[in-house]
Image (tube, rainbow, N blue to C red; front, side, top):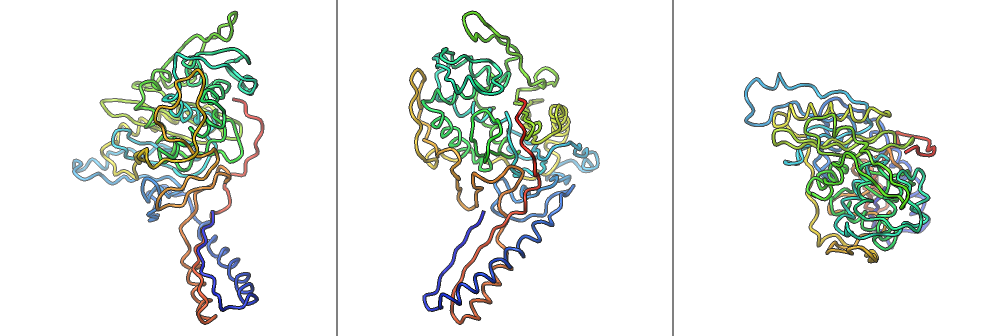
Length: 434
């Protein structure tokens, strides 16, 4: 992303101005990219001091971020007993306390990755307040043609909204996700609502292009954003009712009923599990959100781009560590609170026939629209997954322009350059398997 602020002089000749710009801009851009490309992943706390990072400056780090220093007031000598953060194979993760909002540890928390089906949690919390669970919606050809469709909706058939949410959150039904988004009136309207909720939560690394998380150009999220989404989900009893369902029946037609078995094995294999969401595409790898409560403490774990079939075990390891150290280690950041609803603005979504309609939610910006927030640059919707938000402005760039200004005797330039390193992950995008 690039931000430029310049004062063009009225007294300089066009030839001199063009020549200086051609010479200076590429040079300063190249200089700015050198330290960014040299940033290495760290096994200790990040030393970044950027004040503009959502959740705290340490969360700008791209490696593992953890503080083993004790919190103020902790019992003397307990620091030595604090276990080391387990090593997990994931491009990014966050482990956080949902109650206090404290981020206990993270890896590349604001790095952009493909969400896969973890995006369905955002779809659910966005649409649940709008859609009447007892109403029905008719599946369209678009919904029925999703590949893989998972539950098997039939175009022209009517389905209960509550059944579609159950299919969405138990077996990760891609066709149900599209049907629910279209139940707002139009798919575009549904996507506008979903992106508005991301903005409301300050999940500004997230851009939703489709409602089911299947790979789409410009669609991305971060481990930090998934934690914000999960924290909001924990406050919604309707969400938890669907998400905690272990098994249910779904009537595809009058003659066909299928069984929905929850794909999130954490529910049945981890003490205190509250729910979550798994995801997978061949490009995104395995992605995961897990939530658990023990002894009055509720933790959230999020992981992005894991090896296949490792995400739940990795989540368990991080949750075990989190329950052991919560209240002992110094947090590395915080989960921010949602914005006041009055600050969320944008074009509205169409109303839905046969649904409950809008319930006071502020309309959303269109899908893919950049969502700026006060005091911090925000990613553009089209930036590829596997990259990061823009770095801070280069002091060398500003100094270079100051010299040019003096040399040209009064020509004023104010320049701010933000440049990201090249994407670390150059992945092919074969057809998703799930």
